[in-house]
Length: 260
Image (cartoon, rainbow, N blue to C red):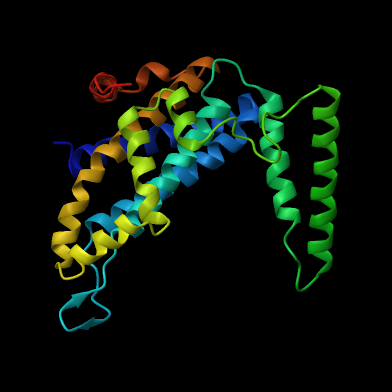
């Protein structure tokens, strides 16, 4: 059974590789800058999730034997970590960087932020808005010049999260978990069934039930490590041979044994 010790090993490995390589990547090719920003977000999501899974929570409110601890909070973060990984893999873990896809992804982000209604204006904020509008104009012009046509209007993904994960060779087990968990994060009836059976459990029992998620977390971590190391290799990182990947390679073989 994959457990907390395995997670700790792969999480430490992922952080060490990221911390050793992100400055080299940013200096070598600034097209990968936002890959490193997304990597920070990915690693923080998993760390926060594990804290929820493994910690003894303070019982802020207990009445009539009810314990207010919700496993859906963990599941919501695991789903976000999957989406983050898919985003990184689609834009950066490919053989050749597709700059049009990356520009389209950025453009949609800037446009979405521009929709935010400003309540209190300041000179600094006005300057930031003008700066980002200029970026929007530049990205739009570059994409138009290149004849870029999006597969979907106002959407960077060519298909859904589940299908895209499978196209990127993320293990089917991970994609299936992501799909199943959508009911829990969007209050499907089966999420209410879960709450109905777990609301009287002690926090320690709920924490124990979360241990099945370590397989999911180790799988996404190892996928991330493998992709990140390939980027370092492609960009000519000089210390690649210093990285011990024996455990990662062993887990990759284990992951590849899952049906695809």
